Length: 301
Image 1: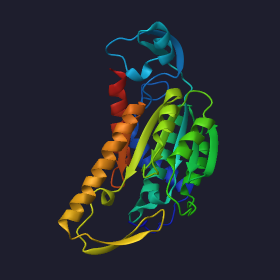
Image 2: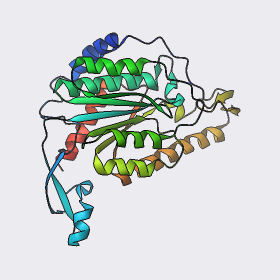
Image 3: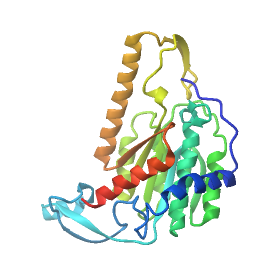
């Protein structure tokens, strides 16, 4: 399937104004109560280790101490008021796919702007790395409204056409090289990538709190009955004609999408990374509330 022609982009100021009124006002009072953010499931600074208890999060296991003591030990964390969050954003051609003016990249701009605004409103620092098989832009972590506008400005710029399949390995490795202290890393992508990125994700998650947000469009999950259709790979440009009126073809298409989903969920679970899925038809404010509710539930375990 080919990318949707891009709609005219709003200015960073217009995007932030819309986010403040349509998203943050609805979230006001519902995501309060933490010095850092309820989006983060554990503190940042390791203060001690203790023996593993049955209700402990396995991701807190300190494998080095466990190996030395021959019994499981977990890390204990100190609540840190100073959160540093990095947004690692996939800007490949497949992220331009979607409905009319609601392409995946548009939803990403809204989501990142809303999260950056939430974090900086609490005095935390945010930075971003935009990736399109190479670093498009890197913004060092800072706080404040100006920083949010700086990130939004980069997200609203049209990405370059690199004509190659996405490699998320490079994005994850670049992110690992930027974050010097333990941080919250939010990886935002559709995860339509060349294989082999899983080791880089696991390595990133051993040093940082990592959350993955996958962007999808309904047409990527279930293709409509529209007769003979020419589809094009948004990244390589390869074209082929398919008969979408064939029920067996639609069934194979849906099964392939389900298999990709299962493989992704399994890979991220093994890496100890939370996965959230956001559709181009979803309401960003409601999606954020669901994410916060999930993270709060985790913290009570």
